[in-house]
Amino acid sequence: MLIGGAPALARNLTPTEDRPLTPTPYCDDGDDPTPAQMEGPYFKPNSPRRTSLVEAGTVGTRLTVSGYVFGLACKPIAGALLDFWQADNRGNYDNVGFRFRGHQFTDSTGAFRLETIVPGLYPGRTRHIHVKVQAPNRPILTTQLYFPGEPGNSSDTIYDPRLLMTMGNSGGTRTGAYDFVLNVQQDPTDPPDPEPGGTWKAGTVYRPGDRVTYGGATYECLQGHTAVAGWEPPSAPALWRRV
Ligand SMILES: [Fe+2]
Image (cartoon, rainbow, N blue to C red; front, side):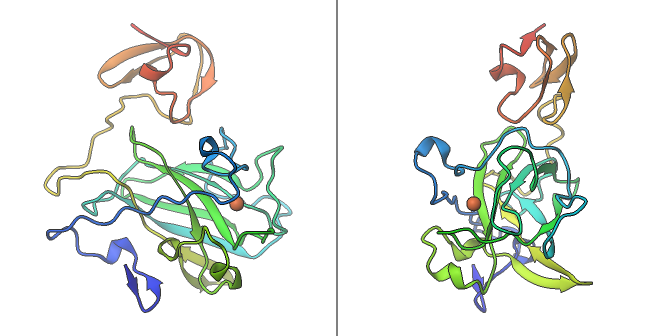
């Protein structure tokens, strides 16, 4: 939905009269050679859990990205995973370590907040931030966020105006607002899901012998690891044994 050339924030929409919200469009990365790497060549799993990508000595224009994660009925999704990665001030990705990479989870109101810098430009792309967003136990949305008014937007074939942030300034920091709408059905009369996964949580370090619940069953950890989305106990028999 576009109003005055800028995207409306999903939080300002009226929750479902008769129409569900439109999911955030899926956006493939143009610098991706194969369908199996849709997130582009620079994604790395196991990013640190953190809400600030600013480290000592970080150079660049400070940027705070914030917003909410909603389902189709415009209800907030608590505990949704957001995994961000972006280029540094000079347009380079850190493919050795985890600079400008980090994941976090939405709070009980479905809100997220990322402290970072405005990413630099690199050849062939307009300015963008990569992100994967996943409601608990749901498919991953891989997409990108864009900046209004960028000269490169008109020539970048991947760019999609539906993924523009709403920009502002606050105390010398650039601010970008964006609300994700995931393709998750929500009955407007339902209460929020109470921890559908059980005690298992992505981002947790598990050691052999640890026990968790997931989907109503109990599992015992077989190998030490840091849990990530996609390694849920039922789908990771090398890591978890049902007990
Ligand atoms: Fe990129």
